[in-house]
Length: 200
Image (cartoon, rainbow, N blue to C red; front, side, top):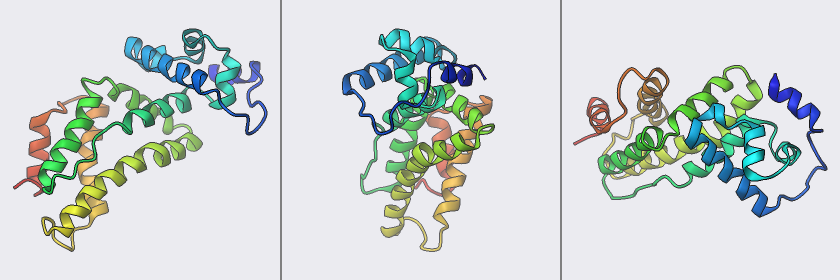
């Protein structure tokens, strides 16, 4: 509600197709990164980002509907830096991929931010679609590529349902992220791969 009022007050939605200033765009995302590191999702309000980036709130609202979409773009950039290994061995690829994901969520500090966006997606159908299409689908595609390569090498049976296997891998990660009841560490990854028959 607060963000909606801010958008209305700032005259959200400038001229369609107006190009972004690369420097301003970078400054805004850098401000998001700094604020998230300092205080998590609550700290990265539009007002705080605008102040840190030395831009007007109207500039931010011209390019992003609100804080969830702004933070989502930041996370998409973070996801783009994650490894997409191709070592020739599925188990090794999965350990690298899942290790980087869990490390980013824990030591990297993005886990609570991802969880906050997931929570927002439950009450905002439009954002939920964007969240899935722009972030989650890309991560699923990256993991599916690893599984497909393993299947082509004969490390997975040809009749394994890869889409279901994706759910079976990501499900425990999300469960532990959202509930925080158990660690997302190397031991967990090793147990998960063993239980799913993905570790030699």
